[in-house]
Length: 396
Image (cartoon, rainbow, N blue to C red; front, side):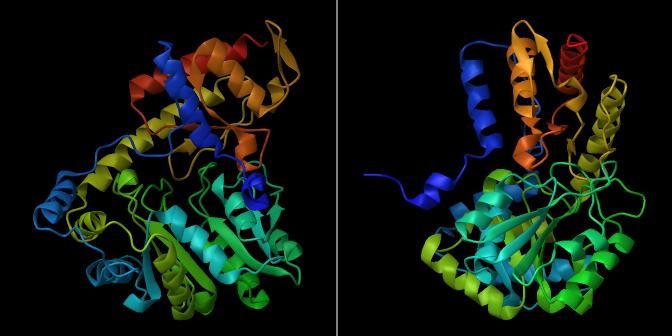
């Protein structure tokens, strides 16, 4: 007996694999500082937890509609109206088991086998696997601008072929922290509208933005409303990663197709988490500013420490909570019989020799880089950066 070809083609998430390695090393008693986390280190705010507890105590523990409760979809609709002045009907919104599942189902909803999906580098680790699970074809776009790691309208236009069905655009970006400005998005929108392709806008980090002009959403371009698949959720902005609530807002036909698929897979997102998400989206949000202030201080510290290390260029992250330095200068070097030839071997060297865990850039389609998360305390960041600096300096 053998696995299906679909499963055999799929690679394990390198961020999930890193967490498994970390757990093993810690069980062995090794001191490791981990900068691989893709989640806020803050606790879910009290009023949100209380809403989840109340849901349990009040017996809100049964199935909900497959597309999510009317209450939560109305809250999402109202939030989109208040935040971006855009109106989505509840039947255009599907609540999902995390934003990750919203992305996957959206890809399935619009892509047939052989359709091409454009994916700018660097990209989040799960996008390629979702594309291949849909039997579509990934077409990466490698940005020429290595200082900002964003694609241009010209690069997008050159990448589009008659087989192109979908563009996935993640802003703020995991892993680079790049954020597209309104003007940059407008240029891409002109190409998207003209070509007629769909665009999946993954805006899960929309509340963690450090630019002076703030966040620009793809919802601000009504000319591509019928081409836009908007993905967001509560995981990052509300420190609710474990609650697993995301959503898709899309043209009604697509939303209803996703609802149908979800009804045969997860049935519905957890009822208790949905109640908590309602509290998150309709309740007080002062904690977001506090969390943002902490992330900004950490961002500045991490970027300053990284850029003082010789030959380590790094984009100043404009959003999310990751830094993505270019470590390729250190390739071809050897230390204690361990040769550094790529991002994987460099990360392995830093983990085994200096006790700091970061994620290889190859997982994000850019082997010249590595990803560091600053979603941890300043004390841990100081320890980690000391170790990274020592490890790279020892390579010469």
